[in-house]
Length: 470
Image 1 (cartoon, rainbow, N blue to C red):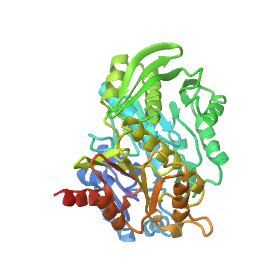
Image 2 (cartoon, rainbow, N blue to C red; image 1 turned 135 degrees about the horizontal axis):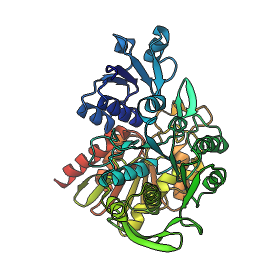
Image 3 (cartoon, one colour; image 1 turned 45 degrees about the vertical axis):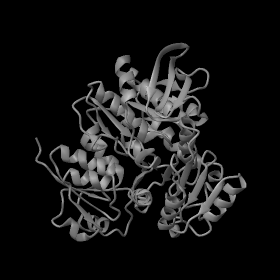
Image 4 (spheres, rainbow, N blue to C red; image 1 turned 180 degrees about the horizontal axis):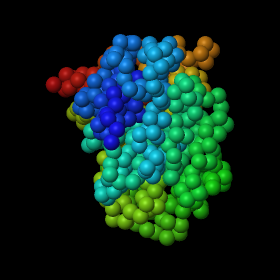
């Protein structure tokens, strides 16, 4: 057995990088890392795993030189550690390349891809297989509630990966999922995203086409029949295809869906035959579709129906996916990762469908590389229809968007008001917290939506509400 390595991860606090760090340590390697933006949940996970993290990037973090450096895709030329690696010729790889080299060659990877629902579907499938005793390996772009990490190296032959279409590193512009040696691929949907690296939807579709093209002939593609782009991909696959969705002809479909505060229930059909009545704890039609993908994969790998039903019913969800952060005097505070307009829309619709009599505050931070641009400016105006009150935070680091292509908060607020919504632009996190602590009433739901830390707004709001009702 080869001796353990010292492996250093640059930008370790990204969800994928942090998960990889945990898995590398589970192999017995000495793991260190560095990052500028260190915040929960990943900072907490790394601390619990006793993985040292340097705050800030510096050449001195590579003294003495590690055996291998994994460079995250958030790292660009000019980063002092990247420059040091190149100058000293320290061995380096991208995150997906490290995954492939250390973990995937001798396992059966299940790659969960698509614009929306990747994290929840990956976590749900990992949960179902784990609860069924299959002991899979997995790496999830988030942390399932009740689990310490979103990554684990199991003893089983299955490895479940969240397959991101984002590029691998500054030195490898291929989509991450092209490294993952897929035996099974799930594609729920395809929309435009990642405007910082893709110029058009056609470029994104091409990446997914390349992914489907490397599924072996004895592999499986699970795709949504409701998405025209996924249907087109499936028609070109060299492997078996299992379709999911509500459209006629889907192999796996959900009928008689029922939303309730505790989640959703539905009748599962295989082709035209009713199989079972299933329940999940996650609200919304989009999560029912995620569950269909899990059913298709689980059956492909011969899981018994009782194991599938029990796993779906007990899956607690993922941190930052409509995660309840706290409740004060009947006011519930949620944290959600939604930043794409489609994700914002289905998240708010799920809450309204589960409990329509309760008022919903949607608090949105334009933060992602696509959101801070104007690509979805018009789409956001229709994404908040299921909310009762909308607060828009300032654009996070607007200077990172190109001149002439910067998102306008004022334009969004004007568009929301034009649709009859009560919407306001807020100049700071502190002002949002003050407004909510004054205006929210018992029974209200406050949903914070951002792909970042949002300035700790969740805890700040809960603290102010506690002070108000004390």
